[in-house]
Length: 387
Image (cartoon, rainbow, N blue to C red; front, side, top):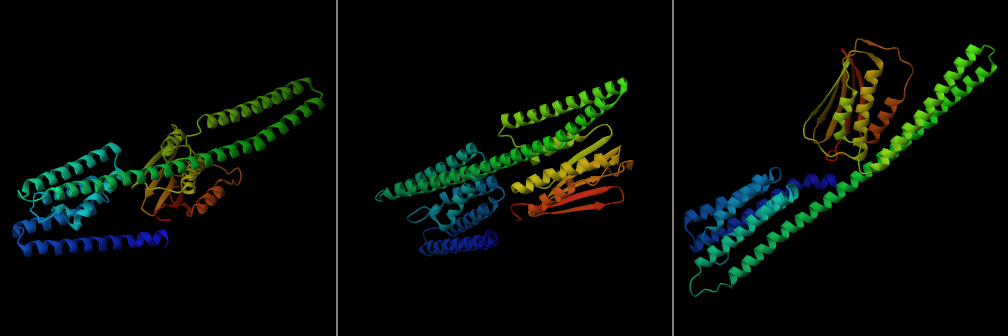
């Protein structure tokens, strides 16, 4: 069974589990009423409390604290109700309460989950004290001790298991971040190599040809001028090598930093703004987890969109960067107003071709629209939930 199939059957499984637990609880409560062990209003109170337990379990999927609070209040109602033999918190529907604790422990800070665990343990102690007070003088109290110990084991085990699962997920996310950092480091190394191979080689050839021209010319003034130009070229070459060395040292000094990240987009947009270039950033919807390739593609799309707008349009220019999130995808949109005019293209670049390859590799699509006011670069990238 695939992951998508498991997700599709999860709601049906949840509904079936709730129905089975509720039916078993109703059957037991009907037996209690038939035996006359509780008044009708007490049976109704226990029915309402068990219903709240199911409501709390469902609510905890989106609002863990609200679901846990509902479940705790329902358990408090059950504690006060009379019940033959074991406590009413041993009803089948009471399983919903540990589920709310599981959900809460997996989402909130550890200290908060410890508070929730303490509340649950105090509730168990209160339940056993109430049950002990209701025991007849000739009844044995060993079942109260057994029940209390069993409940504490269940609640403590659920909390510990949820904590271990959470730690495992955190380790997995940390490993993914480290893989992203390694991919970023590899890409930066590739960029440094490209800069050196292309720009440094071109500057070296230019300097060599200028020096050759200086040797062959007969005019002393021209020779001096060409010599100055060659010297400037050598200075530029040295400056380029120093810049590449600085980039390499920064990358090595901060190996844990992840420069290619959606969190870096606000700073990226802010750095592109100037008095003649207005660049804004907006994000709509709840952020969802992306694959490594999708996150890199999103950041690179924003970089390329801003660069193209500032390079090909005469200022003043307005550029709007927007991320729109849905559970299935994120839409990355870079929209410009066309500027005051278009500059003459210096040549066909390969930036958009590279961006399209990145987006397609991540399972998304890239579109370029020429609107009435300007250009719109739009990438649609799947989230991990929609992949």
